[in-house]
Length: 67
Image (cartoon, rainbow, N blue to C red):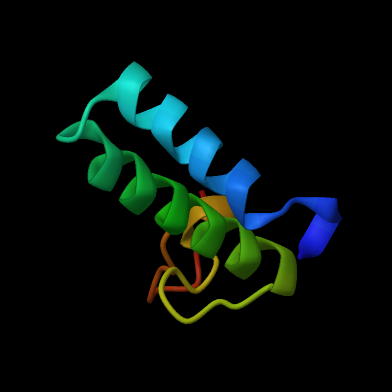
């Protein structure tokens, strides 16, 4: 197992998380962690499929004026 963590330790950690956060919040937490990891990966690799740089430089203007 990675990082020297066995299956018994993983079960114990999951049970502790279940007790702390409850059964309803765990899927929500998993989704938010997954989307955060995906956004971080896209930010690191520099994929510009969605925004096309609008967040940094603003929307592109047609008339050639900036500002």
